[in-house]
Amino acid sequence: MKSFYHAKTLLVIILGSLLLSSCSNDNNNEDVVLNEDVVLKETIIASLGAEISDDSTSPAITLNIPAGALSEDAELEIIRVSKAVNGVHSDAFRVKLSAVSGGSVTLSQTMKVALRSNTAPTHPELAELVKQANTTPQRIASFYRATTQNVVARSKTVDEVYQVKFHTLQHTSGAAVDSGKEVFMSETFSNENFFGGVMGLHEVLNGVSPADAVALGVQVDLTKVPQGIVDVMIGSDLDAKDAALQNPDITKMLIKAGAVIGVKGVYATSDPADDTMISAGLTCALCHVNVTPTEFEMNAGTVALPIGVPNIDGIPNNNMDSGAILAFTPFAVGAGQATVDFLNSWGPGRFDVRSLPDNALDDGVANPTAYPPIWNFVDLEEQGYTIGWDGLLKSSDAGNGLASISEAVYDLVMHANGAFAMPNGTLPPELSITPPQSLVDLLVAAEANDPGNDITMQKLLDIQHFMQSITSPAPGAFDAASAESGFDLFYGKANCSACHSSADLTGPGFFKVTATEPAGGLAGGIHVPSLRGISSTAPYFHDGSAAELIDVINQLIAKTSVTGIPALTETEKADLVEYLKSL
Image 1 (tube, rainbow, N blue to C red):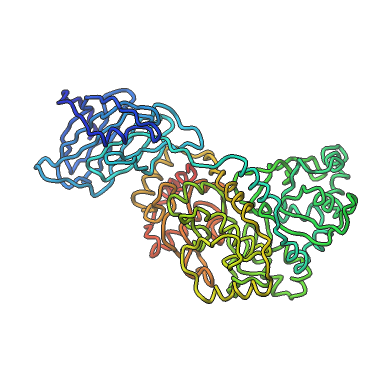
Image 2 (image 1 turned 90 degrees about the vertical axis):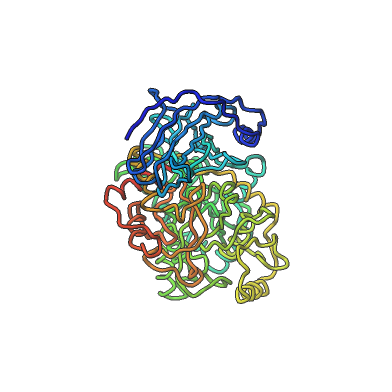
């Protein structure tokens, strides 16, 4: 049933000061001018449901109540509570359902509420509906229908005030961000003592060609490439270009110039001409920074190479095959074929944080995990987000969760000389659980074997600011109509929101949903990641076992006993994919 009904003007509706304050901007306590109109009043037959909007060419509010959703026939009132003010982007409407019989009425299914926004959001703004009948406006999971500037949400509340409000993805700024970026890009905290001194990585780098390096995911910062190499690569001598890509001396020149992202060479002398490394360290940027590729004319035709301007956007370098690189090192080769095969088994975009020599976290299980995206941490921390696939770290009242996990990564994963969780550690660890004594004993032994701490507090705090400065990218192309159907499925039949329940589509709990069940240190399950920006982070799951979003959905359906997601039609699956692409 579709109804366009104008009710006669009723008595003036005056809400209390509590409602008035909630309709104002977060930082603006101005009173709101009330509008006294009842937009419509109508009886809804429960068995039929209704699609209702105000009678205009571009409705300010539309409701869709599914047939059978109401517990009994009900009176619907839609009352315009206030006009839009600074900080909100639509009029506020009270939607009230009352049982015709005079008793209470409930909704067994969500109704769809759509309000027209008076302006379009600009990334990193999110157009959302907020509930505000009580105190602070409550964010509701919403879908933005760009063609009509409607913001759509689903609700089971039978008496609520709704309004459009833009939420800007929160991010830090300032000098500390720039300092943190430099730490992220360049700091090793002396891990060259491990990657060079133990693994012998420099021996590989001194002899690898640029072509082999970029094939393994190495990214090259074009702004730091020596001019002589630039001249060759942009010139017309195709044979010279091919020769340059096969010449290990070019790799050494690039590393010496700081152009190979994430790699720091160590040299015997300060002579600028000395480009043969005696050791090498690694930085966070190796696995977390990509460049915009540049096309070059080669003998083989036009070739796009990962040589360009770095993108500091939080998207992981999923081409980086760190295991394959380490498999060439003297340590790995000397350890035997089993070690070489283990490192090669990681595959691009993954790193086993519990492996490599002298790792206190070693669980004896192959558990390479995907490089996670780095974004939206300010919002996620407010939602109680735990960090790491195992969810072992978080932000406590101290607010140093990202600094704490950075210390853990530098010390335990990147093999810097640190002292995480020890009395001489840099920061008190912000853990989501009390660590078992067995782990504490391992950390104590690790510190005894390699005493000291090169990891400084200010650099950890700066890198936290840097990570908090990045927001997820704007969505790419998607089919809007299909995506809205996927939104309905996500919060309806598919019930994806049972796990991805927060405003940024994460949630509590740990699950085992991958084809290969997590084991060892991950045996407790994988925490629920946020889905914002998901289309930029393929492959998916902690083990990279789903190449595309459709594979994610099929895998979750196959694990219905864990996820509760029922069988879906191919159209429904495609709709869910489009919704995920819209995030």
